[in-house]
Image (cartoon, rainbow, N blue to C red; front, side):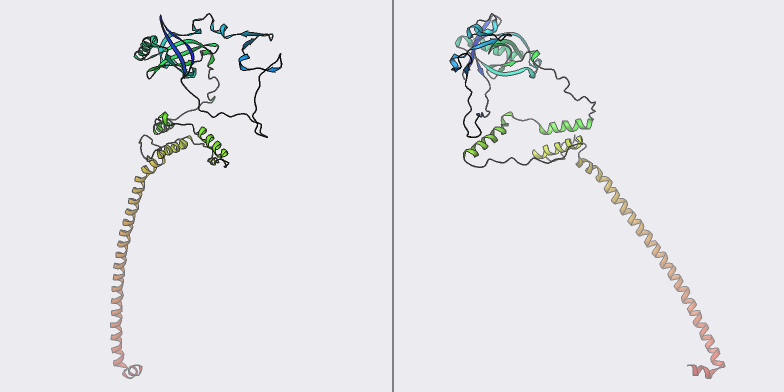
Length: 349
């Protein structure tokens, strides 16, 4: 890796020669400006206002514009000979716990490479001291025309330095929080915790830049004379008004994406599946009650039928006895009538 700055780390009276190397690299796709009518490149040429001619990069230097418009030339020698110790030195000023550093202050990251054999021993000493103390070093250094803050920490077997913004360069988040009183219920917090647990952790090595890959596919398709891939239609969803429902659906979707069942993790107590399971015993009780009612009604019907049968039997007996008596009376009358009027009876027969 190519170094962008050479200097030394000042660790008390110990000086460690180092080289500054970029720790990160950009993989973003760069575009050129073109003339949309014919595809010609758009280029910016650098002209000198006094001579009205284009100049080369080697002819360009730095200058400071004063309030009255006067340009004061500043050379690299002027900057390299500034009367400050951090011009060519990373000066360690303190050692603090890592959690004292606000991530908002973090800027670009660099690796510090030991420069030559003499730097090996003090470099290793500083690295091991940082490891054992569980602290980070706060330093000041000058780079690209300005003095900066830095944080030194151990990464593997190397020392890394994060550029830090000065405290007055970090804005306060005033007026950004909701200006209305909002009450968050415990059930909502429980579901939020369940969603966090379901999403779990992630290996950052598995994450990648999908936007860059999509742009590369578009470029490859157009280079081959093909139609670029079309974006999928966005999901049409209504405005979510119920926060609890949104949390429950999020937990369920996260579990399904991980191949888990929606009923796992008993800490989520307000999911619809849970309510159905709890309502089941009530339905079972209702079935028992219905069965009991049917049995009771059947018993009553049977008893009523028996009573009805008994009554009808008694009525039939009474009717039969009356009928028998009537027949007996009829026979008796017939005998008497036969005895008195024999001829008419025969004629009648």
